[in-house]
Image (cartoon, rainbow, N blue to C red; front, side, top):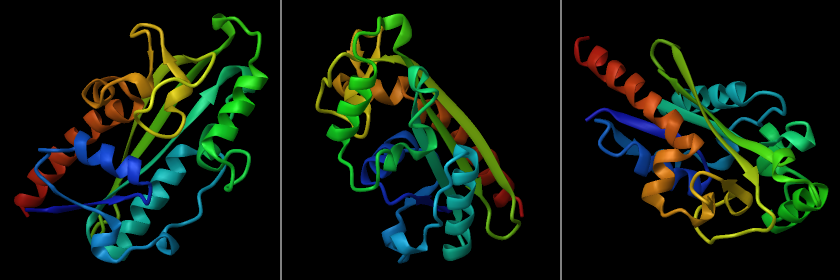
Length: 206
């Protein structure tokens, strides 16, 4: 079976990617399985999810010789001019906790009505092929609002403060099977599955 490297050191993302890509026809491989440590990942930029995802995918493909999937995602809060955006993982500094990030965001939005608490999760995924240098990218977006307070214990990252009005729940309150249908990462993964299907078909004909 062809192997696909999932180029992320975030254990929450790695778990979700394994769930979302289960049954895609590729054997899913973690960085640890090929000896790829955090020091082998390129530094992320502050401006572009797409560029960050491509950097990760290409770095993983070069390191391992495997087709590699790179991912970058973040939370965009309209009242904060789109922040934290591509720097979501290190917002307020790499040592800041998510609880501290929650307090900051909720403090900045204090008193605002739901109509001004709009936000979205955005996810970019890139697939890089080591032998040809070709790279494909897809994007998934999930719209919502910032909750009044953190709710739920599931998921990871900003999930407890991202509220989905249609489901009357934060992302962290959703069971995994439901999150894996509506999330930004799920929407990107659905498109990536099509890319991987076509690539696998192409590689079997070589």
